[in-house]
Length: 331
Image 1: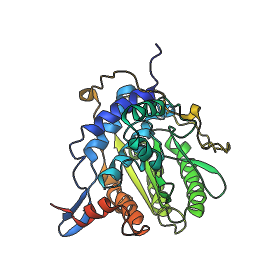
Image 2: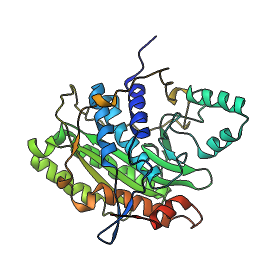
Image 3: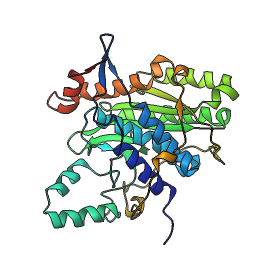
């Protein structure tokens, strides 16, 4: 039997990290010195960011960037949004229309098990997939974190990027792509909360400080554009383990030109029958938050995303998210 791909192995770790997260059920809203503040679960983020290091997954594998997607969707569920509306989902298949998941849950037990098994194996005719491809104004684009349903359309769209090396070579390309993606998506989905989360390895500030300063400034300005992102967030990631071949090829992100939005080929691989995910062996990762300006702070980013979704929807939508926002913890 062939060894499962790095992404399949990573999902086994990601799922276990999220399932065992100490703050998973804790309301992220907290009153700090009388100010309502969103408090992200950075402890879980650090573990998720350590998974690619444990697997020695390069940037080309997609696993390092996937860790950001998993954490962002986890935080949206912490904020009170329905777990089946947020993609990637907490279980396979990672992208499944909410209305389909409700229908599957309503089936008789035996039929429900059979349908769930077919969905997890990718035998869905395109109903379920491993990624979310959405039509923007001019082209279809893969979006990393999505909240959507057939009734509402996209309510939240977040793109994530990760850069661990070749900062001077590729930084401009990644930000340039993000400008185009924001315009493309915002013009077709003006009511969706649109965000951009950028993960940068801390060595950029040590080895290429001018490039790092320029990138921070550019990301901040990107978040100020009225017709682009509602918020831009930044994570500065520090780790000491060596991962070979972390170079990011200087190529533009591919555009989806096939009108078919999903296919069996796009579905996830089934998870291995049993995976011993040893969380104790995950390498340590530190977040150097003092290097991130306030307007790019992850807490602010998540707060803006949640508040924008709630502001752009009727008051009887997302009741649990509204309840948690209105009932913060006290520090």
